[in-house]
Length: 258
Image (cartoon, rainbow, N blue to C red; front, top):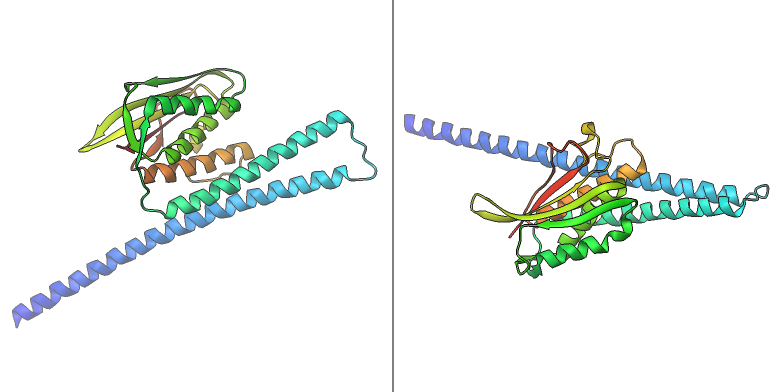
């Protein structure tokens, strides 16, 4: 009888522990789901504000009492183009985020000559530069080093991070560093994109990949890009973070599994 009671007690404890684990897991999933909804809502809200601003501009310039000169008209056209670009990027990137965050794996079958690939990405981003900035690649890899990964997704990460740096770096340098590291039994390729630009405010660094605070739209687009990078890097078997020791500018570091 005592053995039966002891067995029942152990079974009840096991059931209780399983229920507690399920509860903790459900709470974690709920928090993640709410966080995603909050992020998507804020992106849509920003897109709505941008669209409303564009509509207001058009109504103003269609007014019969307004006769703008060529200089004013050019200025408004440039602002409209900029807002349209922001809307396009925020919508496209958020759709990608929604897609990638639901995925658990992705094919990594491309054989990439990494030094050539990184140099090509740097050159493709030259159009985003403004000012006198030295942009260069510093690599520990041999020129014939080949890495098997998903080239398209890796290109998206590098391009978005470089665009973030170029947006706020108008002098000094932007450096893309590449090297190999080992964590436990796994081998990784590590990338660091460092700049001497304005940098991300210290109080925003902990939430730079997650939270869209009430700031200028040019900062909010950075958050969208970083969140997209985080989702992709996870699919590539790595992680991404901001170098906390960087004092001037910003340094974003991420890894991919090889």
